[in-house]
Length: 164
Image (cartoon, rainbow, N blue to C red):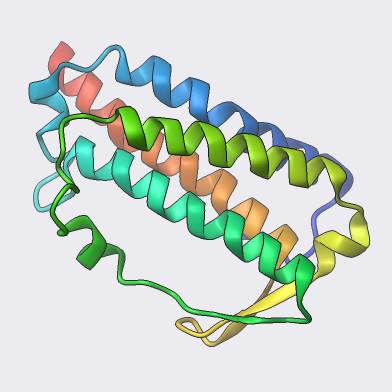
C-alpha cells in the first residue's frame, strides 16, 4: 500500500497532502459542534476529540522519525500504544486549540524539511521496533499523507451524521 520509494509525482502528491492537512482539518472542525466532536465516529470508535488529539500526537512522532532517519543511520524507533494514549487524561479535552496549533507547527516544520530533501534523503530509513520492519522516509510520507486523510474521513462521518 505504501511504497518504500516514491516517484517524483507521488512524492509531490504526498508532500502537498501533508501541507494541506492543517487547513483542511481546521475548516472541517469549524463545521462540527462540540457535541458532535464528543461522539465516536463509529460504535466503539474514538470520539472526534480523540481523533484530533491523536493526529497531533501521531504526526509529532512522524516528524521526529524523519529527523532521526536523516540524522542517524537507520535508527531504531519505538512505537507507542495509540489506544492507551487516546485513553489518557486530556484525550477528550474539548479545547482543541493546542492540538490544532501542534498540527499546524509540526506540518509547517515537516513540509520545510521535505522541501529540503533529495531522493537520497528520502531513501533513508529507520527500524520500527513495534512492527519489526525498516521503513524509508518515502514510505513514512506516504503513510502519513494517508493517515491524515483517513482521520479527516472519520471527522467527515461525524459531520455527515449531523446532516441526516
